[in-house]
Length: 127
Image 1 (cartoon, rainbow, N blue to C red):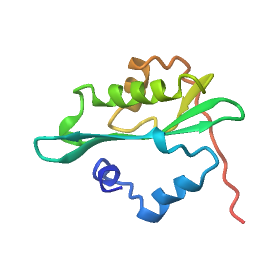
Image 2 (image 1 turned 90 degrees about the vertical axis):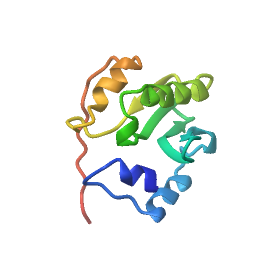
Image 3 (image 1 turned 30 degrees about the vertical axis):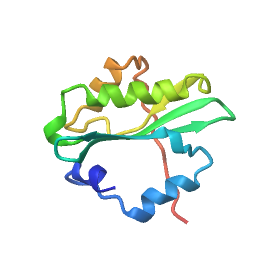
Image 4 (image 1 turned 45 degrees about the vertical axis):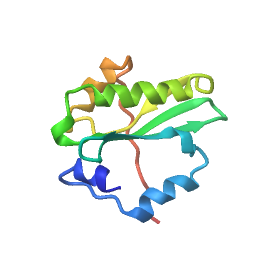
């Protein structure tokens, strides 16, 4: 959680929110990955994948690279590792994220082979 929060200026996720992912129907413990820099014992990249086994859809969430480790291939490695872990289960993989982020996630996903730039808009009804 602290790694995810360190990658954003405007977003914060709590321990409770992150733990809630483990209650999702699409949760898979083997789809949470991290890369650690052994020189300083610091987590420098993380990614959360989810797998909807009913429709065979893989989902990528929270692909984050520490600011000082960006543009070194860690994001691509995380995405490709999650692809590998989903390869026998998923027919397709989707991503979510902030399209106009200064970290330019679209560039990462295009480098990883994503081809459809369709944007979905979600409307939330507050009750």
